[in-house]
Amino acid sequence: MNNRRKLVIALAAGALAAPFGSFAQQQGKVWRLGYLDLGSRLSLTDSGRYAALIQGLRDLGYVEGRNFVLEARYADGKADGLDGLAAELVHQKVDLILSTGTPASQAAQRATTSIPIVVTVTGDPVIDGLAASLARPGGNITGMSSGIDDTVRRLVELLNVAVPKMKRVAVITNPANRTHASMLSSIQAAVRKTDKQVLPVGVRTPDEIESGFAAIARQRVDAVLIVPDAFLLQQLTQIAGLASRHRLPSIYGDAKYAEVGGLIGYGADRNENFHRAAIFVDKILKGAKPGEVPFEQPTRYYLVINRKTANSLGVKINNELLTRADKIIE
Image 1 (cartoon, rainbow, N blue to C red):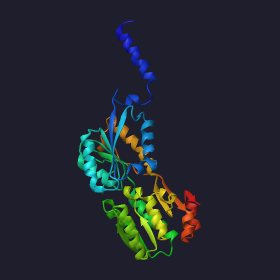
Image 2: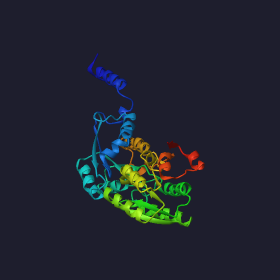
Image 3: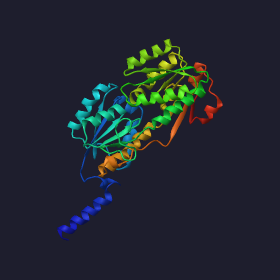
Image 4: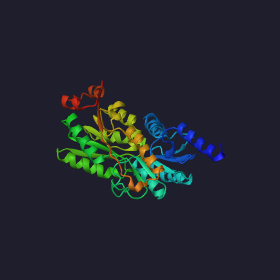
């Protein structure tokens, strides 16, 4: 048998032994994936989002430590540090950057116009300046959008049903998140239709969340609405605890909020976003241009009600809301 024939047979045997999807990647290539998060490492792992991302990649043939490595940077809620962290990833010459949270995505965008960026969670990428449109983003960015406008309107509706006598509602936002201005406007427009008042409260740090709730308590509001945000999501347990301490019915744009003691959580499953982000990574590493890969929006939203919290606050959740819930925590 000549050497050429031996080589052909060896290559064929290797192909049969290789895991499904391995030839979607360059032979022997170890991809360097950057990851930039406004939140903390602990929040990413404890929430299950990291596991969802890694499983999504594994499903497509990418195994951490074998054919890709993850260079991660966490801002721990400090948005002003994101530009430096994004620059570090660019300096590391990563092949692609995954970003979580609008400020993180914008920092990555400022750091590079050539390295592809896949967004795991953001509000409205068009409003945020990350994309020209959802269908054709242009530039070097694509990923998952949260469908924020529909979510915030739904939050107001659900809160009105849960607390029908509500007259004043505090709305907690993160001023570092540019999307929150439009979210607040949507909430104010929805609340005005029901002749209620809105008290906006901006917070950027855990200490400001603490002082913000103290100010809310002094204003004698009837309920609290927390808008979706990567930093605020990281602080779910703190926020739910303060809402309970100040005896305030509360709602947040993520179903997990009710699972940590908040009254109502409503939103898309963020873990699903992270799992699906792997599909974007795979497409781009195979040669797709980010600007030609449409942003995706969630197709499924979840409503979770914590009846134990409702009982402790003296809030009677009506049957209409209970029947609509995907999960009730007793």
